[in-house]
Amino acid sequence: MDYIRTLAADLIAAFSTRDPFELCDALDILVLKADLPIGMNGFFTTLLGHRVIYLALGLPRERQRQICAHELGHALLHQQMNRLFMEKSTHLAQGRYEREADLFAACLLIDDNMLKEGEGRTIEELSCLAGVDRRLMELRFPATPGAAPAGAG
Image 1 (spheres, rainbow, N blue to C red):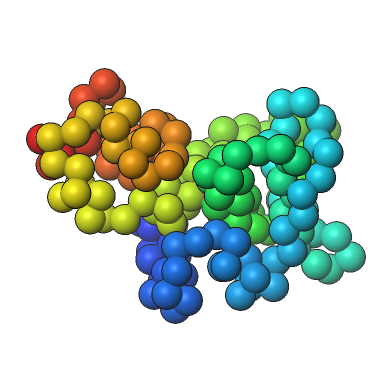
Image 2: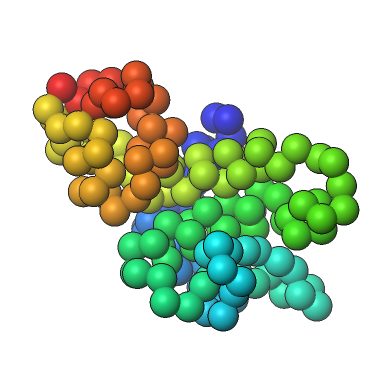
């Protein structure tokens, strides 16, 4: 999974941003907001040769940012995959691809300095500070469940 961390770090360095919307723009990936089915927050697809990320209407800004980062991970790591097809028509395990996209999002959105800045805070507090789900914080800084990440306390 080091290649995922490296990919995120290289993008941040190349474009001087962690913002997934700015990165999508720079990489010519269209981000559209759409009325998606209940329970679907977003997805990535290639449409007529164009990479497109769809985000559900009405999501709070921080949630949009997190979903966009996750879908950007799919766009860069799994661009030949079609999740909707895989889900409906195959028996392939999708969990691996979702974990990889989550790790990419975690590495993109959460700075290494978060540990220093969050000294003594719980993982829930760090998640709130970073504006991400706890599971992304746990992926970024693996630690014992319920405890602050290693080095944060």
